[in-house]
Length: 168
Length: 397
Image (cartoon, rainbow over all chains, first blue to last red; front, side, top):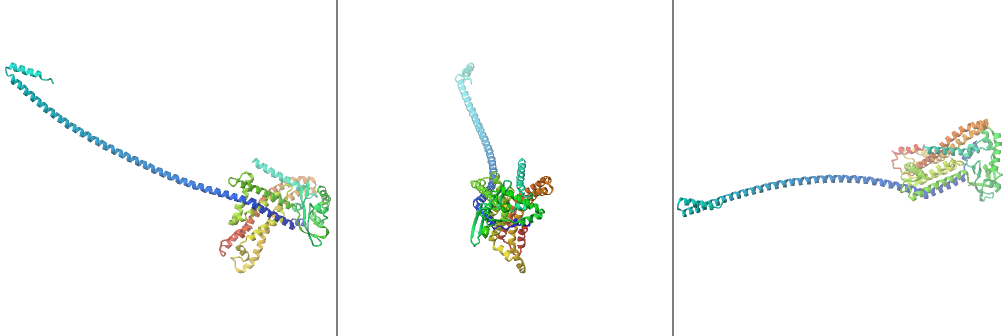
């Protein structure tokens, strides 16, 4: 048994040389044709993943910033619109008020003018009427004076004169 | 769920298929576990036969000249080249004497050798001759035995498998699969997971900025050991990593990388350890010097012992069947068989686990040793040293 156990431990220089050679060849072969491309591909992929994750994070932050900016801008625009609207409404209100006042003044003015005119016209009509009546009385008196004969005749003359008068 | 069950059944089938080859290899009605896990100059395809491997010798002839001698097989060396196989009969008898049946054991062994003559390609040599120590004719002696052995063949097989898989993987990455997109398919995902595990959990924590430099070595050593371990679990397979020579070579690579990559700081720690009283330094120096060598030696023995032990247990459990059959008759042998096989199957699964664990441990410790030597330490020698150094040593233990 001891001797057989020794066969497991027996030195074998030839095998050492062979295995050393074998392993060296494998090492050089794999280093050149396998590990190089594999590890470079793996790290390249990892870099790419890391980069795209960083990019995604950056893009997300940017998007958030953009949204915040947009929100702010929208709020500002809304506020601005509101104020513009309010101003416009106030302006319109003001203008309407002015217009109403102006119109009212104008109407009053016109009314007053009309009143004056009417008054004036009325006066002038009364004046002309007075003139006419006076003229009529004079002409009637003239006629009476011209036909100053008898009473009947006078009466007849007045009657004629009166009938000669226009009806209006 | 069905997939998992079928995977387990497949595993069990392979495990059971792996057993009969060992069982049928019980030439003398007794199975010698150590014999089957030791190196040999043939591939054992029992019951189909044994495939003898080429023998290559560097020979020093009697006149002092050197020569290279090549034979197709051991049989060719003996029958055509006139080489003599020295058979250590005393050793065999001694070995079987310990098991308690020296006489009939030896006789049955000869019967078994007779079978080998029938199945071997070169009739005329016995199994004992096949396994004997070859001596060249004419009084010369072998300087270097460069013969192709079973473990070497399986190391080559492991090399081919690893190279094939990894070069194909690299091709996939070159085409953009896994570079620009997610990895595709079972194989790429599986091996990428392992590669990333070695890089991120083994190399990076120990090597830091030097990861890129040593990663190829760590990956190669991990996949080579893993493949060799697993090849030992395949029917008719052999475990190259259960050979001390193989693990020694692998550990030597770690040793060399450690020493050649060592920083000034590393050598200072060994030759004139800082942070301790001056009179302790001469005592500690030899201990540290010894430590340079004990680390890779432990590395080699750990891998060798773990892989050998698993196989020895499986073979011993199978061997129980024959021992019981020999002692109490074939009926008892048949009765013991299911129990033995159940246990062996369990150990087989354990071996599967051990294959991965030992490949990982070897790689992990290599990374640790190299890391301890090559990584620049930025610390104050008088204060932080003890704390800093305690961590790696703790994990080595």
